[in-house]
Every structure is written in C-alpha cells, then in structure tokens.
Figure 1: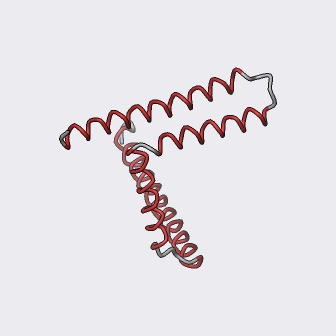
Figure 2: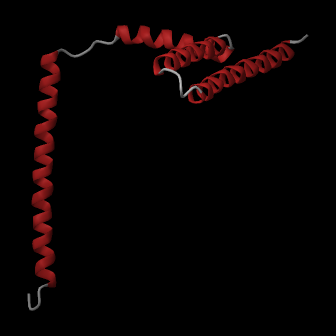
Figure 3: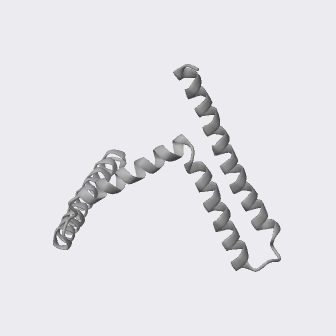
Length: 126
C-alpha cells in the first residue's frame, strides 16, 4: 500500500467517523423532542450525554485531533498575552469616548454648515 492509498483510507474513515458523530447527535436531538413527556432534567442529561458521545467519536478523527491541537495552542497563546491593567483600560476607554464626542461634534458642525449652504442655494432670490 502506498502513502497515497493510506491517506485516502484514513480520510474515508475520518469522514465515516464524522458522519457517525453527526448522526448520533442528530438522533439525540430527535430523541430529545420525541421524549417530550419526560422530565426536562432527564431529557437535558440525555442530550448532554449524547453530545459528549458525538464529540468523543468526532475527536477520534484526524480533523478532531487537529482541532484539539489548535485549541491547546490557542490556550498557550492566551497565557502569553500581556493583558492591560484596570487603569490602562479605563484610560483607553475615556480617550475613545472623548474622541467619539469630538468627531460627533465636528460632524454636527459640518452638517449645519452644509445645511446652511444648501439652504442658501435653494432659497428663492438668495
């Protein structure tokens, strides 16, 4: 068996796993609504269990493992981020609010000027 044949087999198996996971989840959703007469607690616990089973099946596929690796790397990156202090956040927020007010004031003044200019142009005899 060549490397390409093995990749195709793995891809086919991964598709089958993902399809099975989607089917299990869909069956859980259908079951959730079919068991309408049961207690909500039992239905929710059953749905959570079915969802966990579907996720477990999906995680055995290569895309599932790739997603898990991505999530781990993203978490590591979040730990490296230098988050702003409360003081820096407050100062930045105040600067943004002041700038929004200034731009709003300038736009209002420009609007008033243009309204005056258009009024002068369309006014009869003006």
